[in-house]
Length: 571
Image (cartoon, rainbow, N blue to C red; front, side, top):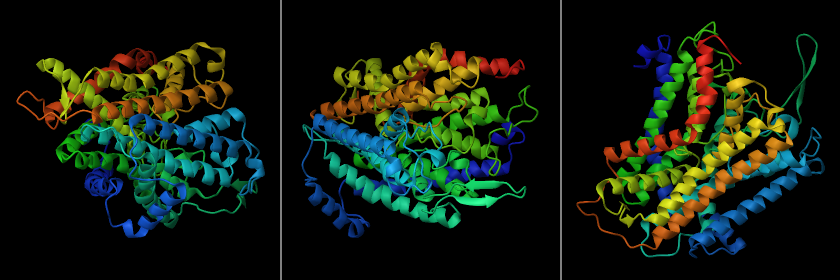
């Protein structure tokens, strides 16, 4: 089908996508089963290695892993932990000139850029308004950014675990212990996978050194400074933790971050692997793997639809371009198809790493990345937060289905009532409101327009992409917009905070409400949520909510640009 659609789209391109999907399908239940055990505190094959270390953490920090928290205590722990991390990372940046492991003698970071970066990495967004090799020291990269790559991802998974417990428990207040969930996710999942991937990356040529930048002489006799550093360790967790960002400014298009086809494949697979496995883990935890597979099928279906649409747009001939597909801004080492596969994977998962320039995509292909994020981080999404957001859509779908059949909606034996619906709506719509409000402000103010690289609808798309990326905690950039200004550093920071913590508050409040309810046995009128019909209805609700919220601004941006491009006008 793809070959017939795209003409020059050949078997190598089909093979790239096919191998990627097969690997994802095979690894999802394997990792998901392990995560269900490890994150429930059950004995697993890593317990002899990390069990003693886990117990030591609890003793040192005076944590009782068996002490349950209600939803308010859990939320307070998440916020307190995140706030401390934000302050520490901000301080590291504004004092980096006085700290060790700074062989380039980089100066302190400005307060607004430090604020933006601290918020970004604390919220698992990893938006970067700077070039890593010219802005941050080795110490800040390791002790600040890499640490947050671990703990922000682990915090997202902890919130998901609390929501799952709220769904499965009966007449209880407790949702587990945040500190225990944080430690287990870090020790048993993120750390081992990161060590393995780091070693593979180093073996393939990704740089990992504490030496200063290298100096070379070009063939023309010019002096050149070559940036190096402890990159491999940060790259491994940035992909596995759906963090994104880059050690170098060129991100995963940089040959020191992504040197070979094997590293490209492994980094791409790592972006989506844990988020995908989390869905299978969910099915195991609720006692029905079929529930998990239905949600996973919805995610994969939307992923494939968006990938096909983006590929079609890139491989179609457009009047302003000499060739199809256009290779401008693409990763020429690995091919156009790989760049598009990466674009879709990184935007559906709230990862944000890139191996091509999204600003160079065709208008409709660029719109795919924007819409992927506008769906609400539910098509796999970030670690923990992606599935948690999807479960809010599941509750809304169950509520709508209940209205259709004229009975109180139920999900896995729990009645879905007004409170759960209100909190779900807030969690779903708050990031969208932040996107539209900040985009509108930036589009009509001098400070918002002063650093814009392009005019017309493409310029609007650049602004829209930035605030969508922030609210979705994605972190990728459309480029063409200089976001390293006080206005964008502050507004994008606030945008990220809204996109992270309003949904988290919604997840936990819903979890607390559901946990206190008794389970209702299924009856003839219960709408099954493990069926294909429910999956289709869920897809419809996701698309309708996104369309009603964002179609006007998309029409003014990438859609108008597409029709102007067909008329021969570019921006």
